Structures are given as C-alpha cells and as structure tokens.
Image (tube, rainbow, N blue to C red; front, side, top):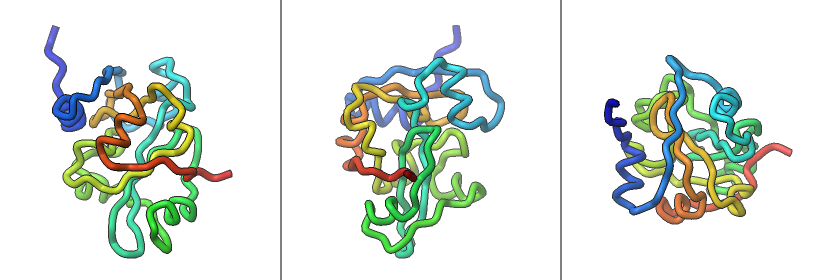
Length: 159
C-alpha cells in the first residue's frame, strides 16, 4: 500500500504534537462540504468548512463553520475587529493560502491568519476539517486546533 503523502496541515499538527485522524474520500475536483460529510458518514454539524475573507484593512482571516451553515459577514467582521469583511474570490484562494478550493484548511497556510471557529465547536471533543488537499479530511480536537493557532471561538453564522 502506498504511503499517505503528508500535507502542510499534517506536518504542522505532527510538529505541534496534536493528535489527529485522516479520513480520505475519492474525488477528482471540488465538491461541497455537505457531500463530503455524506461520503464519509460524518455528521454535518461536526464537519467544518474553511472560508477565507479579507477585511477593510486588507488583512486576511479564516472562518471555520459547519458545512450546512452560512457565514454572517457582519458577525465575522465584528469577531475580528473589522468594519467589514468580504469572502476571497475563488481565483485568489491558492495565491493567498497556498491551498486550492475544497482543500483549504486554517493550518499550514503560507501565512497564519487570524482564525475564528464557530462557537458550536467549542463543546465538541472532535470535529472534521479539510486535510489540506481535496479528498482528505482531518479529525481533531477543536480546542487543540484553536490553541495551537491562537484562534478563538465565536458565533459567526447567519441566524
């Protein structure tokens, strides 16, 4: 069996001594997070997507939220101390993060951006995030992730 290639995210977690599990699925190109959760039999509320936004100041931010929910741009801006934030255009994701759409994760990016994880994850033992490439998910502790990247939990979804 071929050795699993480590992503930047996995190397970061190894270096930070954060335990994680890898989940892989067959996929040639981007599919939405709800489909990923269904393919892997993961609860949607425990499967988080990573969205990257740019604030009015020009700074970039990562927002992690359950795949079935939508980011509230006003709450997100307030959470990072910006007047407003706009989601990054798909064509700019790789240039800014080093990851492709569908493989973007808040760890192991070209630069560590301020990261906000939706508050529902704070009470979870484990959750799923992208593993740093399409077809790979990582299961880990939300608290360990937030501590290691100096992020924080906040309510950032619509509703």
